[in-house]
Image 1 (cartoon, rainbow, N blue to C red):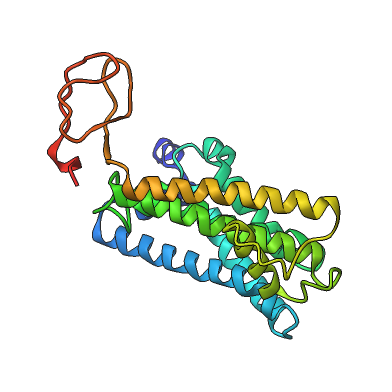
Image 2: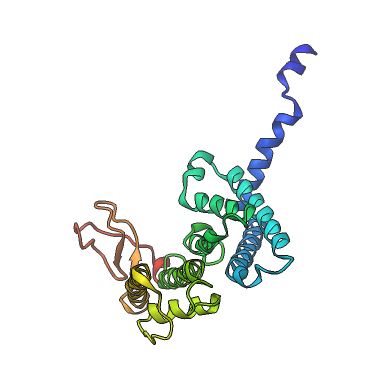
Length: 270
């Protein structure tokens, strides 16, 4: 009796591994239930991102702080669940996407003090669409295809537009007479990014010119990248077993870098 009772661990010790295994299956498994769960998580992520974008419009609303704390609670639960589901939580904790999520959570917990940094919350859109979590769930059919490259390039451009808009709004709204609200900041960002340059809204001083230059140069670069993703000949992602070259022509038989014979699966030909 004594030996048996000593050998059997208390039930409480088994709860944590069981919960971690369950969360790992939901976040990383391939069952139908796991896929539905991840689709729900991604849908909630998009709703959170939509809140981040419209936050400047509803900040004066009496319900803003309530919604903000509710979003913070949802994000905290998601971050905690992802940490428990990770195989190596220390590696997960050091990943840029996790650090960004923690930063977003901090801005949500202290909205009155860190509102000037709230525009960086939109970066969650970039980390979501550039994650394997997204492509293995929503874009499984288009994973490692031209459409993945196009989507990533387009989302990078959209994310940059909203980040720059938030930065301009935070820095110049109600200080510079040309920018009275968020829409004015968005208008300036799009006009500068596309190098249209109507000139009806300009940022004052040297700092304003620097922001305009960075917006134009980055915008041109992102537009070119999007155009390349749309129109350049698509190359299959397949690591060469000899030299490690990642991209090859669809009909490639040998690696262009080292001449190694390739055996690219036909499923990658989209």
